[in-house]
Each structure stands twice: as structure tokens, then as C-alpha cells.
Length: 168
Image 1 (cartoon, helix red, strand yellow):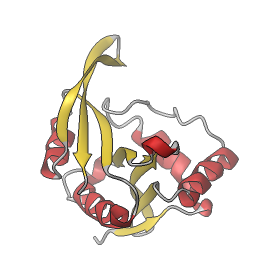
Image 2 (cartoon, one colour; image 1 turned 135 degrees about the horizontal axis):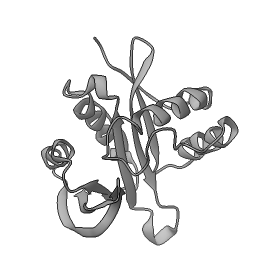
Image 3 (cartoon, helix red, strand yellow; image 1 turned 90 degrees about the vertical axis):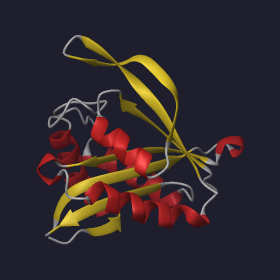
Image 4 (cartoon, one colour; image 1 turned 120 degrees about the horizontal axis):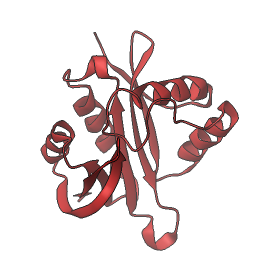
């Protein structure tokens, strides 16, 4: 299995919606659940176009045999004083966990953003999502704080760790 990574294109909108609706139901680690992508295809096309148009934003798709198996986003702030900050998120379909896909996606993204204005990537991760926390630490993200009770999963609250990556 070979992972092919490319920037999202407008034509990927429907596939991305289907992907998000699926991965939302595969774990309790995301901010959304099964079928909670409420955008229609046109709205998703607009989101993708925004990523394409913004110099400090990136939306990457990871494919194996034409199947979308991973999505990585870095959404850069657009206010002039904050353009150095990007909000980071990554997902991988459950059947492809523990295959190094997230690491490959992150390596590609970090290489691609070198020529942008981004100096800080931030993220929130559910406190018990140890696989993700370890992945982020591997790429030098640092824990900078906590967001108490950010996640409410099945009427139980979980903190989020706030993590940043500082880019030289």
C-alpha cells in the first residue's frame, strides 16, 4: 500500500464530506461524531477554495488506491497580526491506524508550509488520546495548557490538551 498525498481540490468536496461523516463515528477523539458534517457539497467546495486561496492554509488528502484515508488541515489566521498562527487537525480512517499514515501526512505538511508566514501551529487533543499525543510530541509539539471539559462524550467530560509547534 502506497500513500499518495495531494492538496484538496474542489472536485474532492463530496468525497471529503463522506470521509468526515465516516471518521466522526470511528472514535470518540474528534470534536464531531458520526454523520455530523453538516455542510452540503457547495459549502464544502467553498471551504476547499478558501484553503486554496489562503497562502497560510493547507488542506491535504491522503489516498491509498484512490480511497481517501487521511485528511490534514492547517487553517491559517487571516488577521494581519495573527497570520503566523495556523490551527492544525489530522484524521485517519480507523482501518488505516498504526500504519504511519499520520506521520507521512505531517512530514509532507510541515515541508509544504516552510515557505509560508506560519510560525506557530496549535491544536487541541482529547486528554486520553495517547496515540495522537505521542504523534504530536514526535513532531515537537509542546503542551502549553489545558481546556477543562472541552469534550462531552456520552455525558462524560474530558479535558483537551492544548499543544503548539513553534516553527523556526
